[in-house]
Length: 200
Image 1: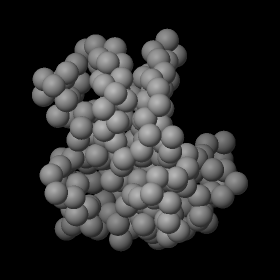
Image 2: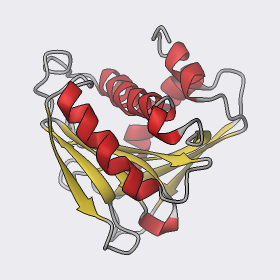
Image 3: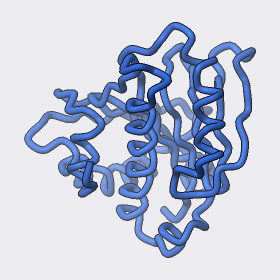
Image 4: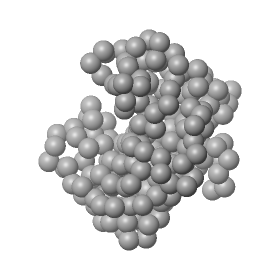
């Protein structure tokens, strides 16, 4: 499935009451420091949209949104293209999955450690949503789900060794291809990054 348009959402496990407002200066600081592995461009404020994208950090290759879809607040990483040198040569679905997880989890780790939140911000790592935002390359069919699952399953064994992991397919034909993943343990962001081979 040769599309870069993967989305990954990790949900909060405790966030300050003013979380959405607090992300605006945090994301502006990220832009000033250019602290992620891609060009960071702007911050968009969608707090007025009910269960919408909240506050969004616009980057050249991806968007990072504090997303409230379905009433569940979390970080939604939405890849649009792959132009950064570290991603330009990706042509294998499993390599792409690893890259998407690395980018999303690195942003989660940076948010958890940001002084703005004083240790109050944490992510749950026992469940997440993976979506393919490309209806042409990845229609929401059982066959497309199986194709994604075949690449995802060995990757999940790396992230969650010796754990039960349930992968379900949101089969509504009107929706984009969406996989809901639930694990039996909540290892934490840094542990998942370590399992991806990142020194934390």
